[in-house]
Image (tube, rainbow, N blue to C red; front, side, top):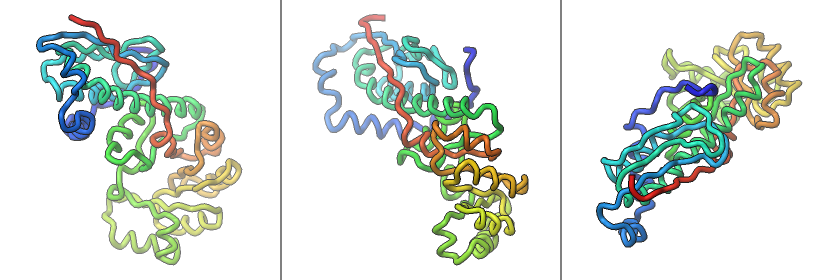
Length: 290
C-alpha cells in the first residue's frame, strides 16, 4: 500500500453500470465510432497506460474499467494505483490491454469518469488535510451532478471525507423555506416528529444565534449553522455545548475551512467538493501490440 492512502469499500457494479451505459450511448451516438471503425483493422491489438499528468487522489478505477468492458468483455484492465491512493505527475494509474478498437472508443468515457472522480477525491483530501488539527468531519452535500451522485459521493469517501444525505428520503433537514411554510421552527419539528420514523435523524438549519436558541428547545439531533462567520460559529458551538451535532455550512471553501473547523463544529459541509472541484488531468497513452 502506498504511504498516503484511504481505505474504501468498492462500489457494487449495479450502482454504476447503467450510468456507464448511458455515457457510452451518448458518445457512440447512432452509428458508433466512425473514426476508429475506419482506421482500426479487425484483430488489431493494443496496450495503453492511463497516466496522471498532475498529483492527486485516485477514485473511479472500477468505473473506468466498466467503460472498456462494456465495449469488449475481453479487455484486461490492471489497476496500478487503486482508489484511495495518491499519485504524482507521470505515475501510472492503470494498464489496459486488448482490442485496439474498443480501447480507442472507450477512452474518452473512461477518462471523463476517472478524471472527474479523481478531481473530487483530490479536492476532498486537500480539505481533510487543512482541517486535520481539528475534530470536524468533512462532508459533501446534495449539490451533485444529476445522475452522478452515487459516484461523486464515493469519490468524496476516497478522498477521506464523509457523506451527508444521499437524498431527500434518508434524513430530515428542515431548511429556512420549510420553517416559513410551517410558521415556526417549533411547528416544523412537531410536524416532522409526527410523521417520521423512529430511525430518522432530524436536523434544523439556523442562520442566527436567536434561531439557534429556538431550535435547541426542540427534539432535534443536529443543527446546521448556515453562513456564519468564525466568531459566530464559535459562539454557536459554545451555546450548543454538545447537546446536538453542529454542522457549519454555506461559504465553506478551501480558504475558509480551517477557520470554520477551529470553531469546534462537528461537521463541515461543502457543496464545493462536488460542484466545483477541478478534474484531475489524465491521459491514455497507447501502443500497438501487447
